[in-house]
Amino acid sequence: MAAEPLAKTEAPPPDEKVASALSDTKGESDPASSSELEEGGPAEVDEKSLLRRLDLRLLPAVGILYLLSFLDRSNVGNARIEGLAGDLNMTGNQYLTGLTLYFVGYVIFEIPCNIILKRTTPRFWLPTLTILWGIVATLMGVVQNLAGFFVARFFLGVAESGLFPGVVYYFSMWYKRRERQFRISLFFSAAALAGSFGGILAYGIGFMKGTVWEHGWHWIFILEGLATIVVAVAAYWFIYNYPDTAEFLTDKERKFIRDRLASDSDATHNESFTWENVAKALKDPKCWLYGLSFHTMSLPLYTFSLFLPTIIAALGYKAAIAQLLTIPPYAFAFFTTLTVATLSERLHQRALFIIGSASFAIIGYIILLSNTDPIGRPGVSYAGTFFAAGGIYPATALALSWPAINVSGQTKRAVANAMQISIGNLGAVLGTQLYRQFDGPRFIVGHSFALSYLAGNIAVSAFLYFKLKKENERREVITPEVQEVGDLVDWEGDDDPRWRFQY
Image (cartoon, rainbow, N blue to C red; front, side):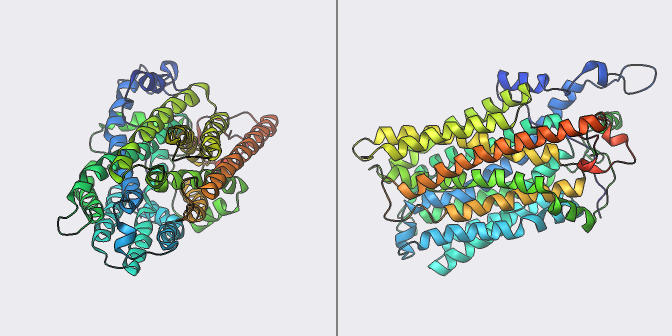
């Protein structure tokens, strides 16, 4: 069984606003607290410089894998308008059934995948998963019938299920608590980039129709799947395990990272895997609430990413133009995700920014639903997709960071992260059945469900805000907060009254 690691950091921000956020993060680089790690003098390690170097080594690597993951799961929407449904003789809502099967596989294998990660290493497990889903994604391009499509979608979900919760847990072993949320948001922003790239690639690949096959959808799966396999093989060399074994760190830097992690998290504990710690997550109501927070976002998230090409094509645009028109909403989502993550980190607020982002997305669905003539006024509906994307992605990123910053106990946190994705993706299972073949161009059922789920997310986030705040106040009466969690031998995880939750 692999020994548990120390802690890590992320990739340098893409612009000055993000760069400022990295250095302004509360508790992230306090010279007074981190400069004297050894008796007799200041530390010889520059914390800010080390963090940025860690960011460069770690975040781009896992971000690329997640971009490929989201691309390979959502490109089916691009393939649909390039002739997929007709070639496989799909009738009624059989296409939607294929989308549902992906999430069935995803939900079932979420927790087992994180348990395997805990018992192996990130360098082995994350690239291996990527190779597996790359193979499945490639084979999807050569399916000849509906049964083959169903099988491929199910196993694509199985293979991809371990990446996101695995990386969130991985971050928790590298970053201090107050550094994780921003990095998770940056990591998740790759999903928005995948949407933009997917539109560009689908537009270009669409011109390959007539090469071997009459329609170009085969090549969308094959070329993007092969690209995933190539990157995954390289990932065995550019994914690192944990700070105690990372080759690019010196011994002094490892000690520095260990000391700064010990100041506010359990990442330095040598915790062995036990089923008792798995049960702790399953018995904690807060872990279920974190899952419900993502559940209420996953339906809007996945219905948007899977059906945006269909929604735009239904406005009257030709397939090639519809592929290109998917790019700007995703680019806007990338911008809002980084902006909201920066503000959330600077102001140390989570729930309020989730609520604000979900409200912004609701405006988008109100616009989509209120446009009674989408074909006559396509610009109005298209504007609604910007509001939807600009709110869904930042709200989801923040919701997904909650277990990583609030659950203490390594195994419990790994399971809690997987629980959140599993519970959340049950919403996606429902969402895949909502945008039915003859519902366009208004898609009243799908848009109404998305709006309702966003309203539900506001309610769940508000409930968690007050619950966590009240629990912190209760604990404050019992005992002061402790920061040096890594140095405690009697640590009881987040059940310990000395722990404080972030909300």
